[in-house]
Amino acid sequence: MKNSLLWHKAEKKFDSFYLHPTTIAVEQGSIMGLIGQNGSGKTTLIKLLFNLIRLDGGEIKVFDLDSRKQELQIKQRIGFVPDNNLFYEKFTPKDIHKILSKLYENWQENLFFQYLEKFEIPKTKNIEHFSMGMKKKLLIAAALSHKAELLILDEPMNGLDPVARGEIRDILQEFIETENHSVLLSSHITEDLEKIADYVTLIEKGQIIFSQNKEILLENYGIAHIGKNEFSEIEKQYYVSFRKNAFGYDMLLKNKKAFLEKYSGAVVDNAHLEDIMLFYHERKKGVIASC
Image (cartoon, rainbow, N blue to C red; front, side):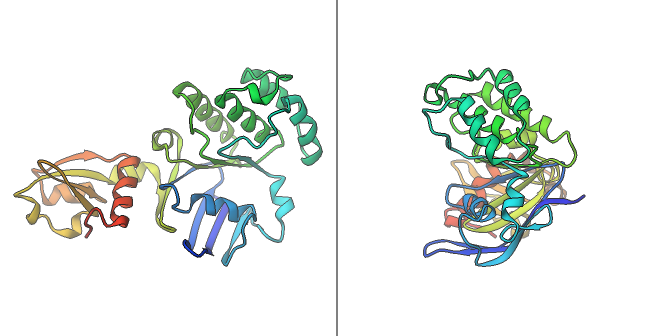
């Protein structure tokens, strides 16, 4: 499978933050979820992709094109949905159409207005009167209306109710039904990613913790619940980190099958993406002791 997007040893240094050399591949026909706490490096990766900040090392390839040398060509093929509304709020969706039709070579007027109808977005109403969900859908409609092959979404679910989030998930699933389409979805709402992502990348303090198939990830990780007296008997190679509670300890396991083969009587639950993200984050802060 070809990559739509590849960060290859991409590196960025700030005074107070360092994005370590990072390699992430987004395959065609897939949804990649990018997770991590605020300040972990998710937005830095997206800004580097769009050349809003300068790479200090490595490269970024989009459709096998160089992100710096072939920037305009690439941007014609990408749809971007930011976390906040980018459009001037006195504009109407019809105004947005007039502007974007001049910016994108493959702008599809009929498709844009079809999306407005589907999303129940009034064409002649000022954006300032839209709900947050309507503004997000307008951004998505614009991103989908110029034959984009890759969608980049930065926290698109922020502030949305469950119904609106479900509608956006459906839109993304429909988008990747065309095999050469791909999605990079940056979000801290891991519940949505568990439902639609094919792959998940966790970044923490500028370092990639993992980037792998979501189903395999959730199949392997687990949370073990260990009593106070049994804790010292657990070999450190079997867990990533632990958290003390009133009754004993919770441990994040990378391989729950191997753990249960060694400690057959242990109580182990499945781990969710939120569990995994929080355990790694706390470990980085030094709050949770790690192996």
